[in-house]
Image (cartoon, rainbow, N blue to C red; front, side):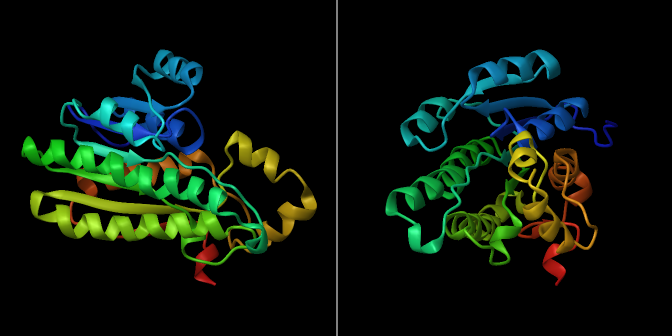
Length: 245
């Protein structure tokens, strides 16, 4: 992995940091000189990540508002935020329950709002311009079978991105989303191991492959960087052309 951005002297909070896209994002940012606060629920994976990258681990469940308030209420102002914490409960629309819908929304949408609230307050108080990136999904942009709750939560996250863009822009804070296709995290590799399920999905991607976590982490780093200094309020598909159809 080659770091192509310079985040020296900048501090960035990454949620959902213990695995997948979040972990890859921490690796890219640390390799690029950032001081990274890596937040997640998995204590052991956070410890391993801290040992490997030098990040500062923060145990945090973003579905717990009180925990967010306690963990971030006294957080020093940071220069960037990556809202990557997310869950997926895939079920048919006719089987969706209020409990499962609420659980997905609590992490994927509400959690991102509550974390961004604290980070924005700190940035504004410190008069520190910065950038936020919300990790959304192609499921926010197109309909997918068995994804009702997940799609709704990610579409809500994109709406959050636009609202934050409008309200925080006057303070010099940029807010964007990235919308990845299937990304080959360890969980996804297992979930898509069946050729009968995998091959039709791949045929819908013009590049004929899924994304690697690093291929999402690098655009996230771009949006955090000064190279994207005039980009705010966008939802950027990282999907090999899937949503172009």
